Amino acid sequence: MARQGRTHAQPRRTSNQRRLAAAVAGLKGTVQFDAPLKDYTSFRIGGPADVLVEPADIDDVVCLVRQTRAQKLPLFVVGGTNLLIRDKGIRGVVVSLGRLRAIKEEPGAVLYAEGGVGMPTLIGYAIRHSLAGLEWAAGIPGTVAGCVVMNAGTRLGEMKDSVKAVRLVNMQGEIVDLPVSEIPFAYRRATLPPGIVVGVWLQLKAGVRAEIEKVVKDYLHYRRDTQPLTLPSAGCVFKNPPKDSAGRVIDSAGLKGAQVGDAQVSDKHANFIVNRGQASAKDVLALIRKVRAAVTRKTGVKLELELKVVGQA
Ligand code: EPU
Image (cartoon, rainbow, N blue to C red):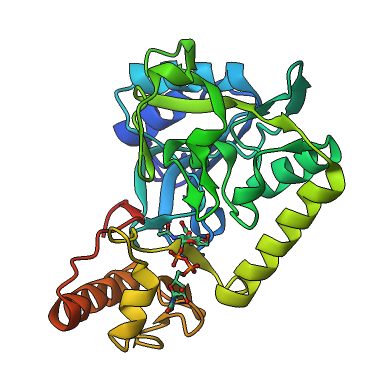
């Protein structure tokens, strides 16, 4: 008996799948279709990416940007912290810079770090080379690129204090080096041309290793004592209101421990929402609404999100 035509054939690819495949064709890095994004965020929450790419080097990023643009697909860089990916995930191409990890010291106490270098690694390198200026970032788990894009900061300082220049692959797939004078920084935001930050030059200062190490250690202790660093979270959820602390305001409204599903306002620091196991983005967003409404009702303060929320619900 004649076989049914389709039985042994590969399932037909849709036009979207063909475009995704064309966007990632020939790359040296890793490519994963329908990739869960949970493990790429510190919250351990998020649906899948249509395709997730970890470029092997900056040339790979250039190639990916050009091919993605030719296919008219959206491109998103997954940064890791201060990010909530909704439960249905992200359409198009998602990029993780996890393989762009080179660091080098340049004359004049300058460090160049590729975009995927984690802040803890960079701080470790700065300590070993007796370079001061990044102590404020002790305990920030994000990548250096993510920290530039959001002008990450703490009580002790912020990214803009150290950035000298940024290397970006723009949406035309060109490598552009921008001096800091051309980058407007604001509270938790840097205005950069659309593109992917693939490298950062940081202007540090020659210092004494033991002193730098002590500031970092003391600050890490402070954070460990006051923040829930052992549970998955996205760092601080809300921006601080002028001259106050969002954590203090949420705490004063009696919201520590408030919970929706597995998402909970931390008992340790009220500006953290922690994932107690299987929290969904829907749970987190419902909890955020609850916190905002209660804080406004009880204190009159309107909290603004620091957390970036992306993807499909
Ligand atoms: N406080 C409370 N209850 C709380 C939390 C804080 O009363 O639940 C009080 C503290 O006792 C303290 C004051 O509020 O008197 C300030 O608290 P903290 O020192 O923790 O600083 P913060 O303003 O809440 C900021 C940054 C943090 C950063 C810390 C430490 C923002 C939105 N938050 O928090 O950054 O780690 O300083 O430098 O800028 C982040 O950006 O993800 C983040 C966590």
